[in-house]
Length: 145
Image (cartoon, rainbow, N blue to C red; front, side):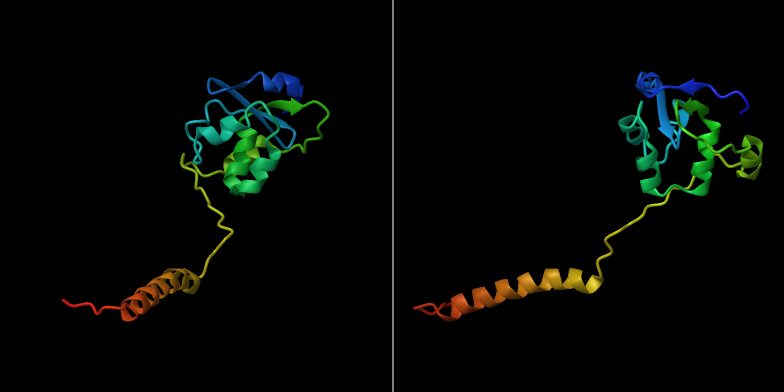
């Protein structure tokens, strides 16, 4: 992109609907309107940050290299005052697989061991059993069946 169009954040903020959706990622202004339906996380995720700088949210998710390369495909300009590294768009698109599908990765932070899950189930069950057994054994009149 030899001639890059420069946008202010207020200009980007005007594009925040599902019919006209722009976001800023790493100083690049992206028109992601056509990508909303294809996004693996759903269009709501993008619409939450529409018209804003979504760099933190984009990097926090841990997008694949393929998703990071898509940023160049939807770029319409740069944010005013941002320094953007120049990347050759043709090289990136040649490396991209021809498949239209994208793979989505889920990063799970809280892996709970199975032993803890089993413990959380059986301890309350054991306590309830002990309580009702104690109550039945200490009754004044015996239980007859």
